[in-house]
Length: 345
Image 1 (cartoon, rainbow, N blue to C red):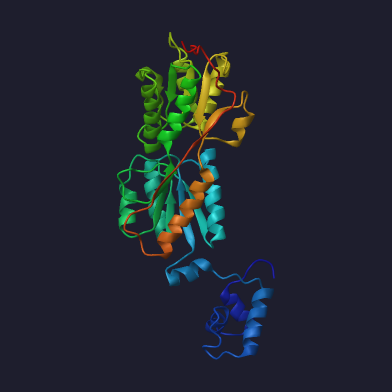
Image 2: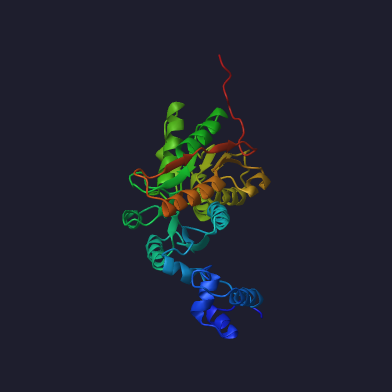
């Protein structure tokens, strides 16, 4: 029989009550003294008719659905797509299924998705927030609902989170540029109100400070993690009378916009300016030139998110929420050149 059948169809085909069939399929035949012959008939028919239990309906009775809601701000962003893939694989290996939602970097959509997923009776949620408002997440967690935040966390919020040490990653990126002789370093930032953006800008500023380079606010530009932002801000930066000699892009998509703008303006990387980008992607090594990047532990973020959430679903909630910041790693390639490094006297 093609496709799968319901328990009602299975019972009708066998000429048995739904209750009897349900008891056999749920391993309760002995408890209710159902004959061995009847059990064999039910199990054989279930195999032949391709019967698949309705896990959602069963879960509603048990108050568990073995599903996890995942909300991310942009499925087209390779960073979030990679994390979502890991989360789905890890959850499936643990017997859970994922309902994936894309908020489209829209705060109101995110609030609606949280409500919808809760109404769908998911067992817990993993949320990569837009990052501007947190009240709906705080209320969800305080109600006792299992939730874990990834990437764009809120430092003052008592909710479990897994993120990258964005400050350290940005500091390493800018320090790398300074070691190669760069001083006029532009920072094209992402969403200004989000915590990862704040941390990366602060890491950028700290690297300048420790190397006694005054920060030029004119060189800190942008307001989105998108390619368009990278493109527009690069055109702006290189219209200055004194353009930057290096650019630090705060996301992989921003860096693609930088590259497009540079090409249109006849600028070459790293001949005319050096470029370092936050977020390592497989394509980073295949760009011309191969791009120096800051690598985040995306797979580890996804794996930890699932395991932390399942701990909250299956066990009593710990007094202090989990807070994990993973170390970022500088990957050196060919988009940075050495310039005017004075020899020691």
